[in-house]
Image 1 (spheres, one colour):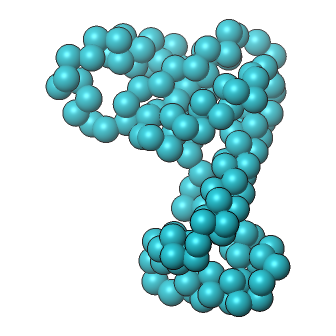
Image 2 (cartoon, rainbow, N blue to C red; image 1 turned 180 degrees about the vertical axis):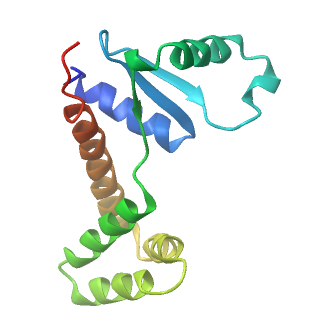
Length: 144
């Protein structure tokens, strides 16, 4: 397992959420973040180019941390919906998840349900995302 702090895990989650490719150096646990959009090099970002070249030239030294898949996000949403105390909230959220564009529908419903449910969702999602990253780090238990 690559040893990282909880603060580093939260930093990785934030980077993934804001559109970065994230790698962690297996020996040092240094976080390497590279903009995910294709044309980032058009902005003359020499640092990103150097980092990308390092990762591409030595992939065995880095662990790529990926975002949760859409299936994992959907399952997180369904779990959250089913854990709500108010049956009406559960019913509404599950209903949104059964329509086309379930993730978008769920997020729109959360937005209009009030600040308490929004905060509960954000906390729940962040916790699950952090666990996803922690599990990815744990599954990388190789001898370095």
